[in-house]
Length: 380
Ligand SMILES: Cc1cc2nc3c(=O)[nH]c(=O)nc-3n(C[C@H](O)[C@H](O)[C@H](O)COP(=O)(O)OP(=O)(O)OC[C@H]3O[C@@H](n4cnc5c(N)ncnc54)[C@H](O)[C@@H]3O)c2cc1C
Image 1: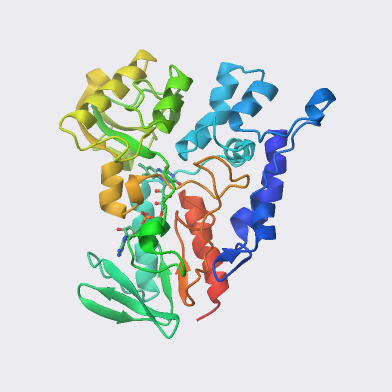
Image 2: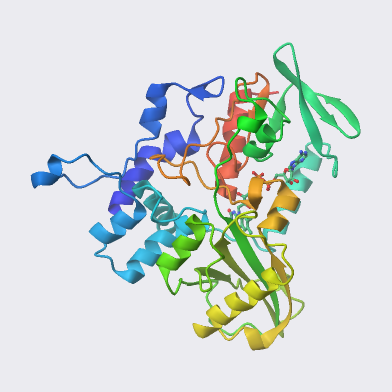
């Protein structure tokens, strides 16, 4: 954690609080190298090791070399990264900052669940005079005289002084809704990262006294989990599962019932066909059996359940492959780690926010992306 704190101190401002130093959306090679260099403090190399080319450390290297390969500590270090779709064998050592942040600052829960947060933001926007048009997908960002001037929708064109896109950045450019100068849509390569699988459970019987808000049931075989996520294999049968059981009366009809959410990081849509008949329901059964084997006793209490796969994420948010957007990380090696797109896009007047833009996914970062972009745009 002390080493991870050094990463936090080095990256907090440039990778969380400040805009990327990009000109027209592009970082200079020197800035890219600086920001892509993993700030995890590696121990000095001694003896013959000094003569060999240094190999970048991953989270797995940290676990092996600095946690003695202890399975429990290794799982604790890797789990927060895995939740963002970063596989410990490929994530840079600096991803230890995710475990550090949770341990140091804790995790926030919104009473009423995520929906309560969305509704609070909606009410606040209405008070500030924001207009909403639901079910009106944008089909193109209108660029005239080299500037974004509005958007086209099925209901016609909407003029604008500036366009701020919260769409998945990959979907925006790959789908041809906007053009990254010099990169044709078909050449826009999205980063392949895993998705999330959730089982929402309505349980009969009260929430047992003293139940933890969050329990993690770790993978029975971490190597098998990593293999499934990196080699597009069928999803791991006994993966790392997060079990959320907040003590929140607004989430249940009465105290004789409980609601619980299971979440696992899984191969994204297309790596696995989550729409195949019975596939997702069968996998939900596997997860329930896995957490029950750890003593949770949920299965026999299930009244009904809703299963959600990366396909639902894809359908509802447009995120390419229904993938989880991870944070912007320094040390951009490995297929799952890289800096996100700068908030000021190469198209003048078009700004990028949300999980696909700097500083990346997760609600805290998504809020920061809006905050940084508001700063770039300046007062109305
Ligand atoms: C199962 C799951 C659980 C998660 N749990 C947590 C958690 O506990 N804590 C946490 O911090 N993060 C969590 N995350 C991550 C978090 O939800 C995302 O990082 C965050 O929602 C991203 O916000 P966003 O605004 O970038 O994108 P989104 O919330 O996906 O919003 C993008 C919006 O753009 C709309 N859109 C897309 N295309 C168009 C178009 N062409 N025209 C008009 N509108 C369009 C979509 O309909 C959508 O409403 C979770 C993610 C998943 C998938």
